[in-house]
Length: 190
Image 1 (cartoon, rainbow, N blue to C red):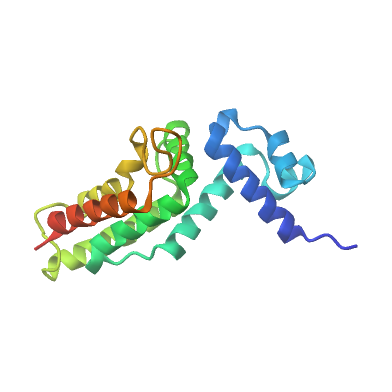
Image 2: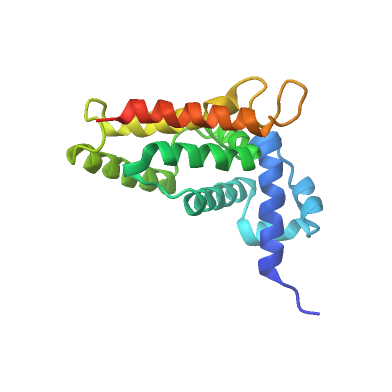
């Protein structure tokens, strides 16, 4: 029977995502990733190099998935902020992965830098066209929009797990999403 290397790679990335989100780069164990992926540990090294390169692949995949799931629209920053919030509600482990990345590898990857530069340029164009308040630097607008979208996920008892360790009910999620989008609308209104 022929092996499906793409399926194995996908299982490894899925397992690595979970492992890195839970334990960070330093705490992640290749043995656990291989076991969770039902793959030979050697394949991690064959496909991805070392653990750090596997983390890079996981992060790149998460960025690509996020960009596809949440397209950026400088003319609708409240909508973008709400979509980022929704994306994180559906994937709470993504915020943990991002936090581990910031702790263990501060700075941006080339892919992150390119993505941010494009978004900053789009914000600048919207400001120049009078669609966004020009009183805040474009990079700061983008940072604030993203920070507002992510803020609840860093709070104790955030949307992913309430005080009792359970997810927030739909009405509470809707109220917080509305607060995020309204805050962004006020921040960026011309």
